[in-house]
Image (cartoon, rainbow, N blue to C red; front, side, top):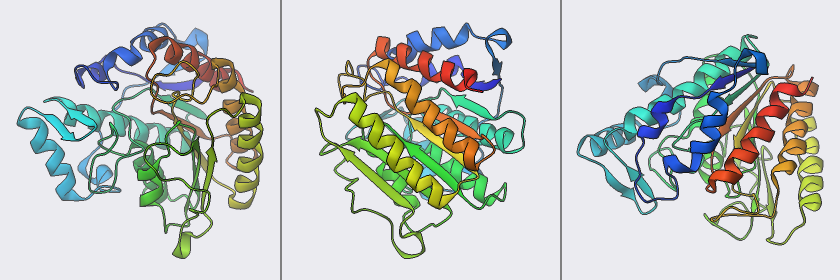
Length: 311
């Protein structure tokens, strides 16, 4: 079975005529809503993240800033990021899903979980929103596993077409969290050079794999597998988290690295193999980007099928 975190309330994060809108996830949401135990899916209920959980990554003043901005009607909280009156509550719901999934997977309720949440999170900084993101869901989940569940090493694998600069930033000097990102380069947000490897005690626990536009899918997959296997073998994670962006699909209007939906099967299977080798199979996948509704549906279907069907 695979634990599934999906809730129609995520539609209430209303961004209007914006790429990160509810419409981008509607087809995939309808597909996920049709799945149940007979499909190897265990649907979950959960609570929004607490202030203490958000505070594992974000500054208290920033949490208050988002709350206050939403309560005053919202708007553009920064150049690229739109907030509506419900956005603060929905962002807490998204982060809460990841924390709940991490806790259940670490405690052995099941080996794998998929959190189909929005808003996305991997650009969010400790004290600022960025790139459609309010709270860094996957980073909160990683630090929750370290601080509250007493894990020693958590690996984050980010295959969104954009570099997860916010995640990299908060774990830059933290040797307990490994960050692996494969992303289009050069591209937004301008970070993710191969020479960015962490610093201080965290030196070597960040691995960036920049990929140029026009790279073939097979070359991308080969690079992903070889670099991730090398990193994971050295890092030996006890839990693997995925920032699962699907905007590297060839039809994505924002990103695109030429991948097809079929390529997310070997991507997912590689992560599962890593988790089985080092982390007793424990994987929590968290939705990030993906802005073509049909491509999102196709990629989510392949990704979830791989999570629930891989032995």
